[in-house]
Length: 142
Image (cartoon, rainbow, N blue to C red; front, side, top):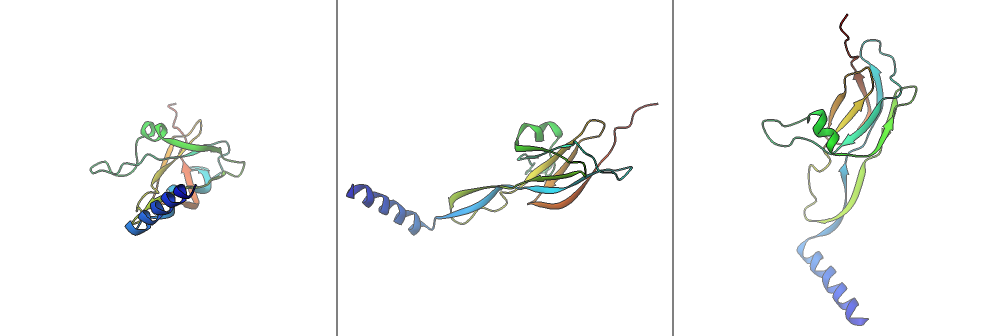
């Protein structure tokens, strides 16, 4: 039993001496806000909202992924907007051992879908707090 404590202490000492330290990071951003109809400015109830970890990080396609790319890498929860169009998705956090703490880890894409509307993809550079998303109704030919 004494040797287990010794090895555990030695391992911790090795991590500390190399500069590694436990760090709590945001691994996927959260989002909260409201969804409105672009034309009528009315709240859109029943829209599905989810955060995707997908984000294009390389030139020349840096930024927002396609809808299919974003839907391939979503994370729970998938939420549905209320009668007032409000949604809330908490950020995802985890503990890691790092030196120095990683940068730019909390990138993602907010995906909003509702029947009768074109899907919206919103790039996230961190948590979106109180954002407003306008959905464009699908134009139907006469």
